[in-house]
Image (cartoon, rainbow, N blue to C red; front, side):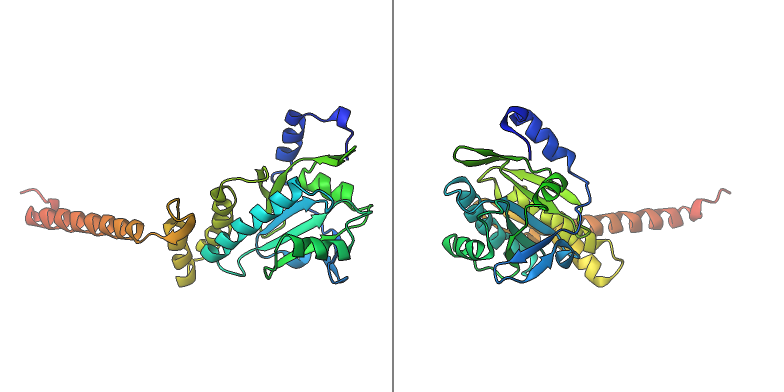
Length: 247
């Protein structure tokens, strides 16, 4: 945590961006049912992290509701189990498991795999430092960076997304890279299929959703066939000319 005198917008942005590539430690939390959980339990898939405080009745609520809309679109495009979402209350005196449970209900969030977590006062500063999250007390509660942090499957900060409401693609595109791109590296049928999904799953602004664009696949196939036809023609011509031999 920093004081208001130490913070300006440029400094907060720099601190946030400095966290990209940083390994997040295995911090421990309590979920809204009172069960202990840790960051490590969610790794193996990308993790979307949003820090809020429950008595923030505008900025944090708008952020959470917008995130819910984007998560719905992302799950539809990438799969229900393709990533986890953590909303963490950093106001440790107020953001108890009961308050986090109430907050989730108020925001209308009941998505499987989305956890609302409380944290102790000793953990918040190190968690904020790992995520590049800047906050400090103010007369109205807290001032803080309005950011959503995307971790890769190994728990490293992959991308920061800023603002209460941001374009859907700002979060879904890097998620798509992590979900399909990593899987596409495998030299298997599944890897090949996910490679297709990576390039052919595109955002359609007309419907505000992602869809599989078959035209991209058709274009790629036409290109491959054209190259094949050209190669066959060149081989045929080469043979017709005696395979390159001179009399």
